[in-house]
Length: 126
Image (cartoon, rainbow, N blue to C red):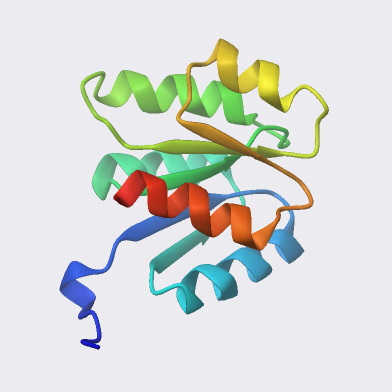
């Protein structure tokens, strides 16, 4: 089996205000073979996305300062033709309705099932 080089690794940006979730997802996604960027601030994330768009975004819905739905709308304004897959993550019981309302690629409920996480991500990169 050939190891992937840094050049062909997919880059995932995780945006969540919970340090523990960021830490766990960072470790898990790296073990899956992805390059991972972790941010706990939506405003900083927007600037990073403008400068260096990731291959996929895991986005928490409920965050202080700027929530995930606001950030999602701003990401879409940056480049309306961009097809960066955005997977919403939340502990809210309304996550399914929110994902449908914002026409996102997928959603994951907290606590995040690691097998489902892997499956959802792999489906986007297939």
